[in-house]
Length: 193
Image (cartoon, rainbow, N blue to C red; front, side, top):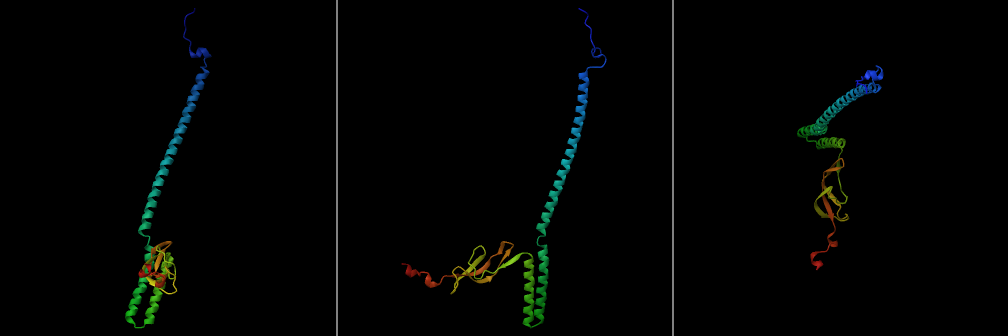
């Protein structure tokens, strides 16, 4: 046997190195480039995420502030429109003190009421005048019953105070008198026995 001799990589490949080693080095370099690219994209996406998160937080704060202002100043326009009605009432009171002409006072009151109803209409406040309707405890508050000839039992025969709707919700029920059946149709205590 011959002497053991260390063979270098160059001697085995004729000075060119192992082809597999070169491929591995190129593969490692390629992987390093790909890793760098993926890291750059990850940083870019993280930055986009942080910006989007900050934008959402700013939007949330802005919407919260707008909602608070909406609650705080919701009736500002309504109140401003009512100021003209108040002014009209003050002028009417002043005129009533200066004149004895009831027709002028009545005309002023009618105009002021019309102005008020216009403001109500603008803000979707509608009156509820249930005369002749069947009594409904959701919309009417009975303050008395009365026997009225020709009136349907449990129907509204008098309205002491109109009710009002705000949109589709009842703002205030109407105060009403409800018709009761005639006395002869309901049995008396002494007839029941």
